[in-house]
Length: 125
Image (cartoon, rainbow, N blue to C red; front, side, top):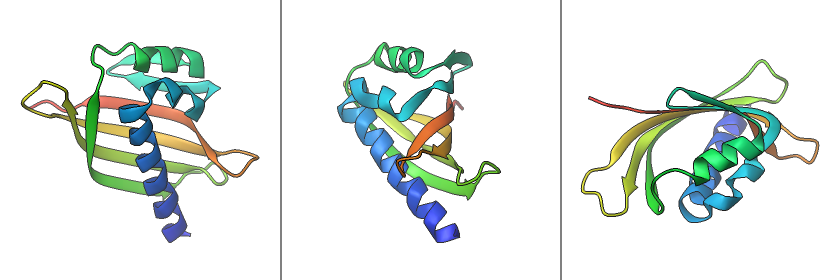
């Protein structure tokens, strides 16, 4: 069970940041109408609003470098909590930005997962 949780968490993280870095316009497909994102304190709900926010960020190309991925089962049947830390390198910037992000993944009837909750923060200091 623990090995499966870790494997799903890692596969999701690889997929999410690959989409974010290379095809951000498709990232909304990972969310549902009742999904929630807290991005630097701003709360958004629904795949359309979340997608609009992520696609309107004031930078285009970027690269995520993942430092840690911690996954554990949630109390929702089959759900997984994934906590990520890493850095984002923005095009034209000398120094990467450190970040932390938490995802609550919920299984779908089709056998995949969607993001129910997503909390993102830059780490300063």
